[in-house]
Image (cartoon, one colour):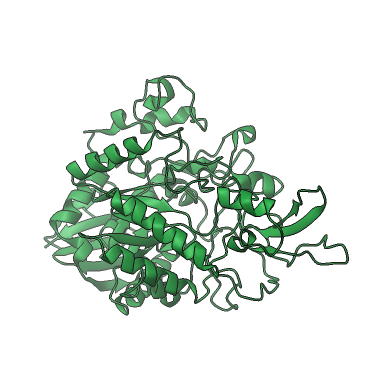
Length: 500
């Protein structure tokens, strides 16, 4: 591993798992102190690991001192100009300023109450009510975040993963948008760009940030969480004077078929090559159903926003088989690979979590129609027979762990041939030894059932079809996501790395 990315650890009311930040220059007592953060950075560096911290610039917490000052101030004040406040529509101003919806469900506007108790203006929150959107037309907001960047760079962090990087700038007229606001989805290619996402003004912000990072010694990195399509539009975020990388969500969402995988890999590489940036690859993260479960659902059946009791359940065996094949395919691609904690254990989604245990604001704001992201955020199992699987001294954890997870625990997989954990270790070792991340992809076959490509001296074959696929005569198998057939052929839903 080269680096670790930490999700937000800042002081927060935890309305959205820490993505509602009350103070960008401190650590929440839940997690420790600034001194602990300094120690973590130093210890990581001593082990050759870089530390990337999460930065949340689209919105603050409603508990942030700026927002509290805005609530206490009058309409049109300097305090309110840091956020997006508007008068309501209708004779009494009791209708939201536009029809925008929160990506968590429900209206994206909440009306305030003035100090005298009368209804006041409305404020925009594209996410939870506890996450008011900042006004990036205000120079003071720019200066504040330049200071936040320098604060953490001075403490030794190696870079930032930028949350909702495509959302900071809104269309100036805040025009109505009749289309549904899906959570975490890129703009559909055949439709106009939504007025709240991927506005051109975001790019000057990141040019300014890049200049700050470049002023520090060593290599620092900016990584965009930008749900933007098509790939050519996403590539704008990683032009030479902007960010270094952007998460490739089109790849994450691609169907498990040979044509879909070929198309997204080709598009991704062509788009980033056009701006001289590396492509990124990711299969799971803290916002989507884990791919060991997602790939156990019917191909082409859509991507659920969480899975719970009463929902169609994934095929766990098929999901893990495909997840291992997808991982071996991904780790052979040139570019940077991001792994989500627990996927190296083959962890599935917690798909039977009691609804009363759910914390994702999506669950409540969607009227209990979308279960949200809690199922992928459960603490991972370290020890099969320990309380909370080794997470802590008791069985208490912030989200309940399913009883079935004992079999996935690290101590049940370490040094066990064929385990998912050992497959990841082997693949990562070979990836580095053969320089695959800095390599070049050459397609050898791209049919409806089998994909084959070469990266350096390795040939990679993934079989999506029903019939076993033969491997070239004399080829040496370096890694395989599952055992080969008795005659050495590659079974369905299996990826192999070959040499020779």
